[in-house]
Amino acid sequence: MADRRDFLKMSAGAAAASLLSCSDSAFAAPHDHAADSRPNIILILADDMGFSDIGCFGSEVSTPNLDRLASRGMRISQFYNNPRCCPSRASIMTGLYAQQAGMGMMTSDYGRYPYPQYAGTLSEQTITIPEALKSAGYNTAMVGKWHLAPQDPKIGLRNWPRQRAIQRHRRKIRLFRNGRIFRDLGARSERLHAR
Image 1 (tube, helix red, strand yellow):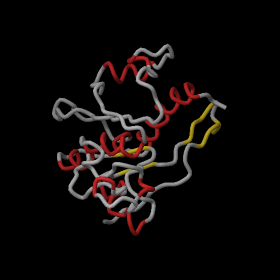
Image 2 (tube, one colour; image 1 turned 60 degrees about the horizontal axis):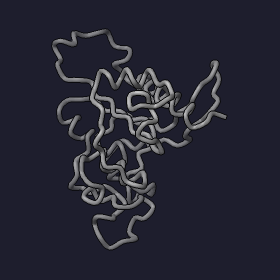
Image 3 (cartoon, helix red, strand yellow; image 1 turned 180 degrees about the vertical axis):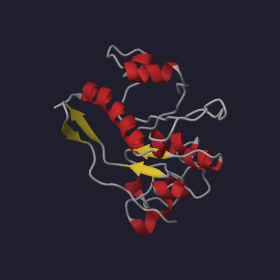
Image 4 (cartoon, helix red, strand yellow; image 1 turned 45 degrees about the vertical axis):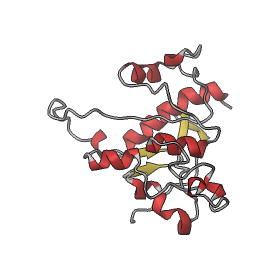
């Protein structure tokens, strides 16, 4: 079984490969990038990492692919992290404090507190990064858990990935070693297409 550091090294590559495999543009003919001056945007959010767990932030573990991405792009070094994953995801996906986005606690706390800041689902008044990018003509995709709305379709349907402008979402991630699956990181996929 892989330890935490092995997992971190392999999962970023698996996530990127999974995005490429579901992208129509990965197999399209090359086009003139000079004509389209918009940058490609890749946002990597990993739970349970310390600040210096990857090389570009000072890790003793070699992470050359992530370091290469970081050297050619922008690194977020002033992000306000929350002690739980749902509020952190809400903050990074909306650019707001978690309470402003309606995710002051976990999705499983839906309806537990009588305040809209702790609704357990994204507020309808927030805009997510994918929604802003889609309105600017970008294609959007995501690999991994969404965790910004309850799993119950009656409650969380308006805030699942497809409803918040994620055009392609792959939740099931498999890590391969020597051509064989050695770890399956997810078994479910959120495939709701219509609003």
